[in-house]
Image 1 (tube, rainbow, N blue to C red):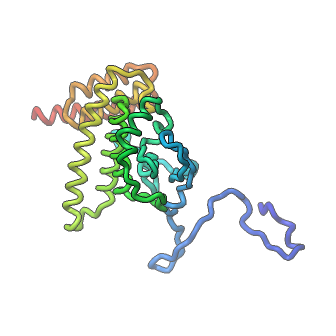
Image 2 (image 1 turned 90 degrees about the vertical axis):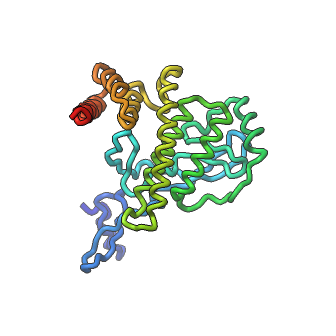
Image 3 (image 1 turned 90 degrees about the horizontal axis):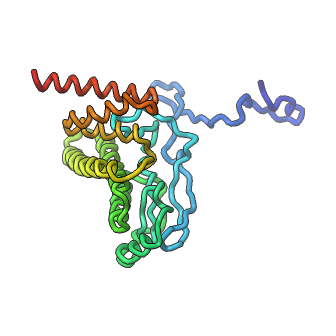
Length: 284
């Protein structure tokens, strides 16, 4: 149905008005000459948002994701989020260009007066602003730098083990994303891929250690995760390090939990099957 029918008497012809709020589709011509729908650009998922720094009180603009446009894909086994056309992890940290205070978005506004004092004394006085202009797009290298700055801020402000571990995990995920974006067939990329893999493993190990300590001293929810989600994350990380006894205990708690969703139990059961196969293979 053309919702704007009747405008013809004004000499106007309005077509394709069945859905007024449909995304505008762009077309490109393929090699065979046929028209194809163009993939959305990374920039189309972003918007500028004004943020007030919790430390220096200055206002600056940072890139944020238009969550309504995202199309979620199946996450990695260890819950690394994946979306079509964009790696949202690159835009999940806020960094003040004036004083250097940086944190993952969920933690940015939550500072005690003592933490503000520590950041001012150990970061702000030494911070050298690189550029006050927010780039149009954030590449992996810039994102990794910001997450490292966020980790340093967390250490300085004596943040919880869970926050440090979560920042390390995000760094590992980012390095995995960067590695996947490199052309493995190009010999020139071999050294970069190796370096990404080594750094990913280093931050992953720190994340595992940090979460292991956090679950025994902190309360849930933790980093936005409930107990079942954290158990599953620890199970996948323990599986990565071939600590099958630790992974099996985490999985058992999930499968016995009345609070765990069917999807989480399915994931846990799938991981359990992998562990059984690995144990059989090691004994063969």
